[in-house]
Image 1 (cartoon, rainbow, N blue to C red):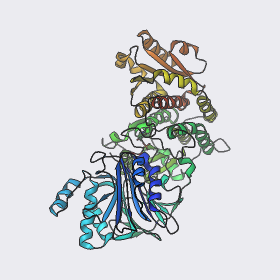
Image 2: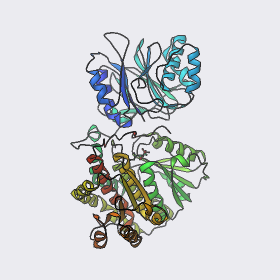
Image 3: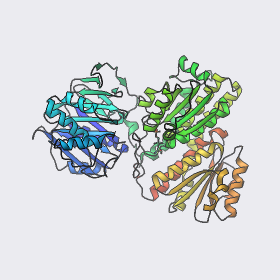
Image 4: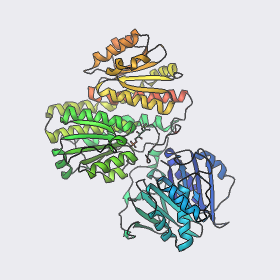
Length: 614
Ligand code: M6R
């Protein structure tokens, strides 16, 4: 949460910062701000605005600043409401140092009292202002910016990333990371820093990821990394980013979310092609012999994740149990990390995450590692913290996902989990080769089926128009499509703000049936499966009570089509892949309802793409 960007070089710093912030705005959009060294006037120039980046852009037009060094920020508010005064960059009380921050400083209250006693007056309600004043306070005493930075950061508790800039030490940026992501972009005669690589894509593909408790000193010519505790220099080989700038643009679509939904068939096709070799075996380039040895010995699997990734984890747990015959469960990271789970070296904890930076999932990973479990991350963002810290990683290769509502990352997670399950089943010898071949054949047909669904989107258009004013929706599914019901409901509520609830259809008579009336649409996900007849009974029961049913079923299912008020056909597939197909119309349904209601689809209120604070 919150996007940070910094630049030191020869270009117009404000243009670089604003372009970077455009790419980071999905991380938070409560306010935005920049600080840079004003070469004409001398010293720091700071400008910030409440609200979206567009407001800051407008304000900037009123200023003509020449600068080649600066920092910028787009905020998701934690401490202090969204306002100009709480916006970043924050400056110390003497206006000498500016700081942008992502994360939470847990001991800010104590430090604030100490600083007040030393005569510091505070303007904002943020924890950030404490950090910048602590650095400023040490700076006034030490007269050495790096030393002051080190001393002050060493006293801060919590999880955060910073970049600072000083008016009277103008040619450097100082950067620190603990838990929250920071990536440094390397240029020629210029260097960059950002919360994630999307902000760096227009300028460089050579990057260095900072590790926890490291700080970096960036100048035009150089990047030096140090360990905060020891003060010793750290050598790190740069990595090369494989994403390109086109992937991070809307490409003619009105919203990133719609573009990302339309990318799904191609991405799934690419994943399947990449993961199946010429002899028809599933393989993962990032899993070596060591990982195989651990995986062969595992006796239980936990899927741990948040939000949409949790729904993918549920599907993963069903797959692992059915095909690898391992006891498996799925949990949300925020519960797992705090409940002191009993874990052994024969357990695998599979962390699923698009961003690879979600705070609770990262903490769950660390907890699992500390307890000796084998940790495997299924991650989209290459080089992210979770990808780097897990014992093994499998990338989902969905490309940058910008829309706050996760779409292509979800279906990429589902396909990757299916492939991984067949791989695991191979290690545990729980599936016959013919069974794997049949399933892989069915999986290879999934991308074309997704394409077909996208081509039928007018039917969804009609359906969404009919229901877009409704304020309550119930989603029901069973088996592999219980997680689909949860995911469909999450998608709708997060971008349309309608209330939507996902439920296991078998639980309907244990409570939610009380909600059934002639006003609330019930979305029933009922493709061909072993629980199909049970789903039909649920539909009958809803109709018997005058309810509205929107059904997702297998093409040609006349019985369901006749029972339901609206029917959306899914191409036939194996039951275990039906959540992949069913996800797409539900994503489109949510998208269209939100768009018809005039919602900000890519940047829904109160949300941020990457939840890097608890
Ligand atoms: O980056 P992650 O996959 O770890 O993110 C997990 C959730 O924050 C994320 O899926 C969130 O629920 C999305 N907004 C859902 O669309």
